[in-house]
Length: 127
Image (tube, rainbow, N blue to C red):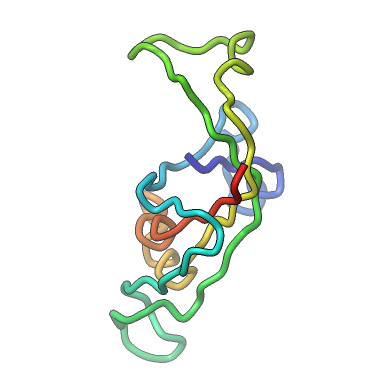
């Protein structure tokens, strides 16, 4: 899960609910790779600057450097983990590159948020 973790995100993206609850979106665990693994440019639909809608490899690949947490052992379905228990569920921390295909993501954002433009690769350091 990728969370909007700063007031900057809340203001820029106009998420007033950020001030009252955690906001995030799910990604794909199967696309998490160790640092050094090749990153493949995803294919998707996007609007060219002055042309038609195209389906081709992303022209706007970038990444954000973040801190990631590896969590476990988990909880029983339907049972919440209290704040007092949370530290016992953190296995470790990693540096994380959150890869984005900004042109593809731009087409996907409305109304449901990112999909293939964000879920094609996340690279992490060894812990």
